[in-house]
Length: 351
Image (cartoon, rainbow, N blue to C red):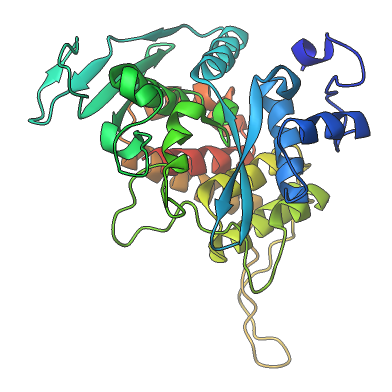
């Protein structure tokens, strides 16, 4: 946050502020954010700017509105460039005392053969980037067909015409960096990844290909029937336990992974609720009902770690203990449950 605050003036974002100031809101509106933006989207954007330490008034990070047919309004998504991702990753690695590097980028042809240089005039079928954080490898593959930006007729447009090889590699790099730095990059996507969301007649386009049986990652984040603003409820919650309950209710109501990540991130700044007193399930009460045992904090922690292990296995990550310590910034045994669940949500998104 120091980098943003150094500039001073009325637009400086302060670590302690909980809402946009009138001056900040006026500049955001001039940048293309109109009155259709939801309060929850603005609140989440402020939290994201504070967490990533990117300055929206220098166009390091911005909100992009796209029409959503289900909600019948623009839905705003935070975006940065691949350069913004690199800034966040290098800063996070330096602060943690970690090394950061890359293996050579690889491109795949339609037959499945990988090359370290792409010389064909036709676009590659996919690109693979491997980020190395403190000795741990985080590999990601981006398929050209899933990310290419197209015109109405289906042909590529924009930079995807001139530099399809570079653009595909940037998408793969963004995926790999988000796996290597899940806490720092959760909830924000690169412009390179999101270019395809602007394709014509693409109300149902996806950040990644959605297979049969999977949920729609662009579905409305809250229930149209209930109209609940889960993110706002999380900000107003008194403790992390309440945020976890809100997170579970949002998930049951069909919230998208990015929205769930934002709720989980809020929980990391909340204090833990007082530990409940365990109740033994031994004797029936006066109504003949056997009381169930209250879930203890130890049980909640064990469940969170079990979920994290399962997500890491699904993402095919190696060296679980070292990787989680690097991602969380602390040993797993010292991490709060909210941080563990936020990392789990990020790994499930990347898997």
